[in-house]
Image (cartoon, rainbow, N blue to C red; front, top):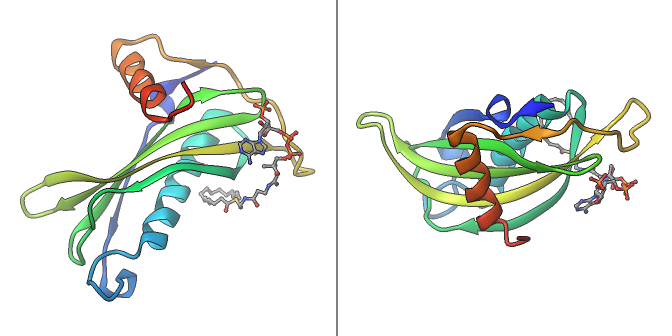
Length: 147
Ligand SMILES: CCCCCCCCCCCCCCCC(=O)SCCNC(=O)CCNC(=O)[C@H](O)C(C)(C)COP(=O)(O)OP(=O)(O)OC[C@H]1O[C@@H](n2cnc3c(N)ncnc32)[C@H](O)[C@@H]1OP(=O)(O)O
């Protein structure tokens, strides 16, 4: 068993000119890559195995992230099957000078745990017993569109 809270990963990326599109905001593909990496770390903390990305659901770019801001990315596992792991991902734009953050991007990734032969392998059960964990799980299940 793995507690949901043990899978929580928060990471910052500084948005620099080499990450930008012609609008001086972070390129969507770059934001997606950062989210994929943070999500994979969360999935692997949960599974205790290498995890590969199998699916990206509901990738919503609601606001841009400007050059000079940081992208603050949060990931946690909210559901799991036999070998599949569902991770909620949220990116926020953050002004480090004021610490103000605003949600920009949300998505739901599915990873699959694989063994040394690169075949799917079983993952532990997810537990979400605390009030905080239950709230995080509920928010993800409401948002992922599968429920
Ligand atoms: C790479 C690791 C680096 C490690 C270093 C650590 C550093 C950490 C940070 C770095 C982070 C990098 C982050 C980037 C991570 C990539 O870039 S990974 C590269 C991109 N992804 C790939 O190349 C994956 C390609 N696909 C595959 O290899 C195979 O399709 C898979 C995903 C292993 C599945 O194999 P399969 O034999 O088709 O699986 P199958 O038996 O049919 O189903 C197994 C399970 O997968 C689920 N599944 C299969 N396909 C799908 C799908 N498309 N959608 C949803 N679920 C699916 C099934 O529902 C089933 O679920 P369970 O019932 O077991 O829960």
